[in-house]
Length: 256
View 1 (spheres, rainbow, N blue to C red):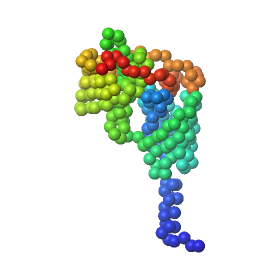
View 2 (view 1 turned 135 degrees about the vertical axis):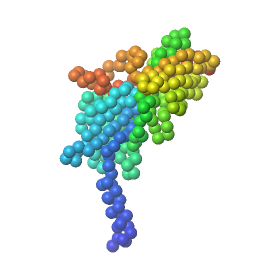
View 3 (view 1 turned 180 degrees about the vertical axis):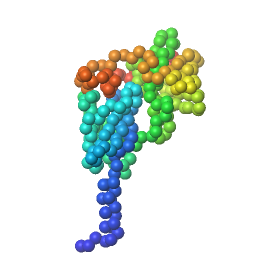
View 4 (view 1 turned 120 degrees about the vertical axis):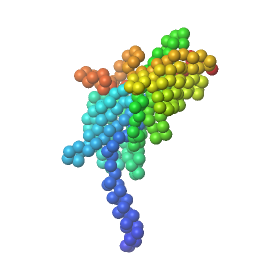
């Protein structure tokens, strides 16, 4: 039976569209190693000579960029890649509309990881660290990531074992603020001209405390756990992607 012309055209168009899928570009994803915890990642894929692909990965919250992807292959719609330096690998499937890659990241454990086309990051993206003195000194780490919906934010309190606390961030010129509804807290401050710090006031339940947030690495960090997925020497520490399985407890200083 002869196929009607219209359906023939549609079938050919579908095949051509599938072959036209391009995996190159910048992708962003969220790895969730524990409930309430997120690790923001960036994947950069480009064409290489001979029709092959090159790639590297960033771990935004760990201020680690340019992690080499050792091998990468795309056989539409399947994408696979591996990074020997951090003993990690990914297997996923590109959606038919090319908007996302859904799959699994394996680095000791296997976790779901979906990549979506990346939004251009802002100059505030990354981890910001500060020391809050509320009678006891508490380290705070604010994670900022630009998304299609605006500036996304989460807060960690390592000394209390709390991470991934949802926050709402806002920027207007040099003024920056974030609010955390679950604990009735907020921060209002000013961004330095060189974007190296944000100085302001952290408020909660009638208390007001000075707080300066600096680019990641400004305050001491606990030693990362030694896990099989961490690379052995001679791989540099900066290339490690690690995630801590901390129980998420209440962020409880001056709870309202």
